Length: 268
Image (cartoon, rainbow, N blue to C red; front, side):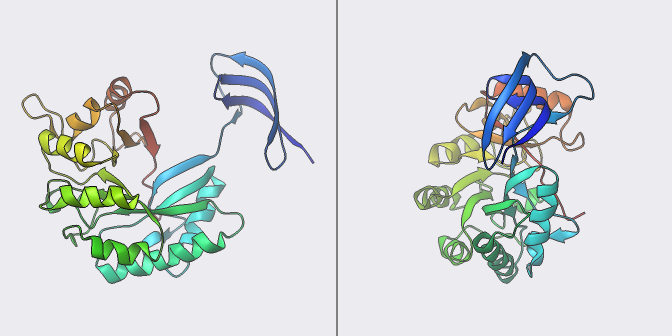
């Protein structure tokens, strides 16, 4: 059985005003190419993949006890088809509780929910001077602690501060383990950011927020992020966390596809 949706359809080749037919997969896209959608026009978009989600619908990933099911359902209602369940800096036992719940959801995949692809471990291996909204339960990165957590649910992304002693070696270990390291909640210098990129860092977590800024005499973590063509940058584009001009600078500096929009969504 084929269902049809009419509107302005976003495709790899640009916008098409017409009709999309689909069953389990897209079957047809018929219509006319246009430069951009019209005002108020219905948009037909691919499902979103959100790599930084803490919560939604009143539930927080850190709550455990089925909280991730609520989070995944509410985000599916708003167009997110897949997400990374994102943790907060916390004592080890609290993170274990959260990841046990995430691991269960990954195995069961409840119906009507966004698919949980794994975990974004945001902290606890961050700089206490750049906590942002994170609690102060920071500690240095440990492959032993990470292995315990990874056994509960697959960790795909890990946010850390590279300037913490021992973290360059930790980044190298993460790369060997197939876990993507991202710089975030960092007070590191530009030079420390470059060294981390050389060690294997893949990206930056919520660019501009909770990291050393780009300035005239000190380029900071932001400077390292914008200069490097290979890494990507997650950006919270809610009109509050990042000024529109800063977003335009990031889009101008980075190659196409290297700026990722994330929600950093919280429970409310």
